[in-house]
Amino acid sequence: MLTAVIGVFCFSLGLLLQKLPKRTSSAVSKWINKYLFYLVLPALALLHIPPMELSWSVLMPISAAWFTFMLSWVIFGTLGKYFHWDRTLTGCLIIVPGLANTSFMGFPVLEFLYGPEALPTALLIDQAGSFLLVSSMSIVVASIYGTGSSKPKLILLKIISFPPFFMLLASLAMSVFKVSVPGVLLPVLEVIGKTMAPVALIAIGIKLQFDIPSLKSRYFWLGMSYRIILAPALVLLIYSETMDPESLEFKVTVLESGMAPMITGSLVAIEYQLNPKLASQLAGIGLPISLATVLLWH
Image (tube, rainbow, N blue to C red; front, side, top):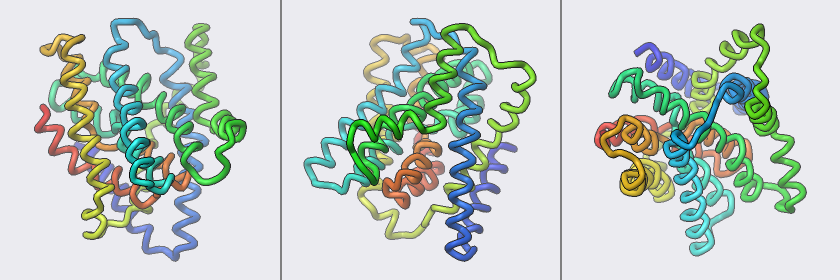
C-alpha cells in the first residue's frame, strides 16, 4: 500500500513540474534522466547481476521476457515498413510495449495475488529478462531507429558507451568469475536502487501529456493491445506446453508478460527521441489500464 501511495505522489509531482517554465522543466527532466541512466541503472546492475546463478530450470520464465521483446521487434518492425511509419514511431512501439513493468508494478501485484513465494520467479524474470533487455537490446533498437547516424560502427559505439550497458557487461563478468561486490558498497547501491521507481515516475509525469485525443491514438492502443493482450496470450499458449500450467512459476510468467509497459523502457525511448509523447503515455496511462487486465488474466 505504501508503495502505491509513494508512486501516486511521485507521478503527481512530475505532473506538477510541468507547470514550471518550459526551459526549467526540460532541464529538470534532462537531469532526472541522467541520474537514472548514469547512476541508478548501473547501481542496480552491480546490486543484482553478480549474485545471480542461472540454470536451465529457471530459463523458461526468463525466456518469456526475451520472447515478447523480440516478437515486438518483429511485429512493429514489419508494420512500420509496410505502413511507412516514421522510424522514431516504429522504434518507440518496439521498445516500450516490448518491455513489461516486471518490477515496480509486477512485484507488489504478484505478492498481493500469490504471496512472497511468487517473488523469486518474478525477480529472475525482471533481472535476467527485463533488466538485461532494457540495458542491451533496447539500446540496440534505440540506436537503429533513433535520431542520428545509423552506421553500424556508430551504433556499436553508442551501445558500448551507454553506462547501464557497460556496467551490465562488468556485472555479468563478475557473475561468471564469482566476483562479489565489496560489502561496504552494498548499502549504498541498495539506497540508490530504491530510488529507481519513484524518480522514474517523476520523469514520466513531467513528459506525460494526458488528453482525450491522445487516448484516441491508434498507436497508443496498438502498443497497449500488444503488451496487455497479445503478449500474455501467446505466453499462456506457448509456455503451457513446456511448463506445468498449475505451477506458480507458470502463473507468474504469464502475469509478468501482461504487466504495463516498462517505465525504464519508455525513458530509453525518450532519451533517444523515439516519439517521447507516445512513450510517456504508454508507460504512464498504461499502468492503471494494465492493472485491470492483469487481474482478468489472473
